[in-house]
Image 1 (cartoon, rainbow, N blue to C red):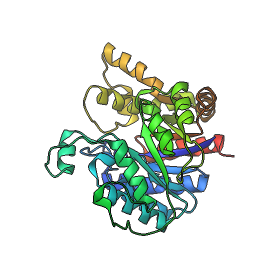
Image 2: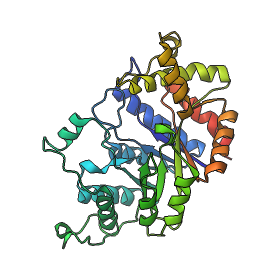
Image 3: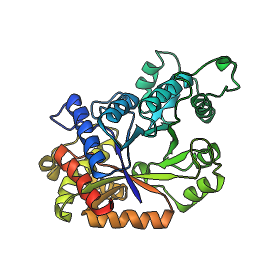
Length: 331
């Protein structure tokens, strides 16, 4: 099983966004050395807690800092942008780093209504068929002419460069059929709500049609994970992430607390219940136990690759998560 990374450039309490971006670069170079297959950057707006608002920019920087690691977006929130501009950006990236760029897109906004309005320059958001928009982008990337008159007699520059891999993100299974029919990879965000099922995977595979972007169906599943040398240490380091998800559940965005503060954070009985319920979205333990869970999940569902998201408070702890998992899973 391939193992990869999804990064959100988390900004912990007491740190800065600039430091978080430096941490992302350090993580990418380590991942490259350890043999991770790919690293994607997420897109989040209107938050002080995450510094990944322009994943295509970060991906370009990471591609220049690494040698073998595939880099890309998980994903571009395509509702905000012109298909033509998105295609030009990823053609440029793939021209600069041929064979190493992943074009991953999502249908979510990546932010609240204020961010949506700002990204639209104050104009009301006009709902559109995002699958149709994705299809248009794929055509432009492949130097085809979409049926929309807007793109008649148009060259998408740079012209005739190697294609990136194309991926559609999902967290409920609603997009599995479309991803298959479009002949792109399907990336499932298990760490969002834990709704992955064999039915979703099989549906994608059943509907898959080979394309210039992918010859056979490929599925990545993203898990949140905290890994340490002992189960006790992992539990200690996992508490800040559990609290961050609790705050998010309650509608509050707060920076990740230090483990010593999180350890004694006052919780109501309802808070405890929410944390326990959310633990199904967060793999916590030694590298051996987490790897065992990932292999069991792969056997159960039939996916190809696990992506790991780990927003530890301390950057060294975060690096250690990926060192330990690499030692256990990358042969």
